[in-house]
Length: 424
Image (cartoon, rainbow, N blue to C red; front, side):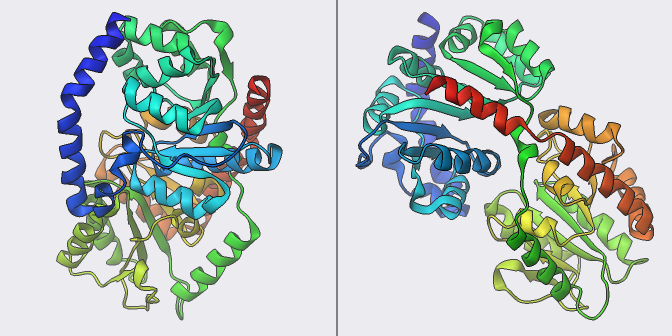
């Protein structure tokens, strides 16, 4: 208890800094200036009659991962309201785009007893599902005090994160005791939770629900049409660099400029991870002397176009369907990588950088089957791209292996639904 009181005191003291950070982020992303009351647990209470299931997904990646689960819950429990929270505007946009009025969406409250309690009184959850590893002491304690079961779904815990939680000692142990079930992506992550104080009977290994991604026929048709339009008069090779962070765009563009010397019709789709960076990346492309088309303009690239800037939200999965070769970002910077399964589901040749601790298990599975090329240096990325641009057989081999991994590791969603059934 004393650890949580100290944590709460620190949180209140830092609240002005947190609000200031929202203001600073809103300079480039104005949505951060909106709907502040929700973050303090103030919003009009929903008018549903029965208790709800609350699903918390931090941002875009977690929301996309949660989407198949939410769809299943809507079908399986049609009379149970679903409340979906995020902490970022981009996550909020994804929820609204995917589900509209089918779910009740607000921002998650800041982690104090006052704000979380106010939120819980309004939404009245009978079950809380937290995607991946969002551990908030007051949120967990408030649910435990009200005897609301809490399921940590698709959980992962890297070695680095485990060391960080271990330093918090008693606070971490208290948080883990408040969780009903931890559904982990793999056994190794599970053992890390155990080492931090989780009881073994709280743990279940389900695998990653990100493997349960389904490409519907409409999406496949849209990608085929877009690919035909963007290839113009010739069969252009298309390289996508997805979810890139500051520093990675420069690496990609420098490699691309060199590749264009040998593959003059190569087209790059560059998709920055955060929308507030769209303008900066557009300017960076122009500084390289490249002809850029913004995806948001709906202008079709012609044979003179070098780069399509992916400056729209929610289209990354579609854009993966257009490409021949995919680079997954967050991997040449200390972010830990991003979702490798999306391009694998399309059967695309995948390249990535070496920093993959957030997707270590998935990267290991792909590497073991020859379904990903992990490039440890910028020079290695350029060399690999030379091989893949020149060799259709290499692209097909890499893509087929990736798709095999994606297909054979499905099933986590059904295991997760079994655990949810136990709590309802």
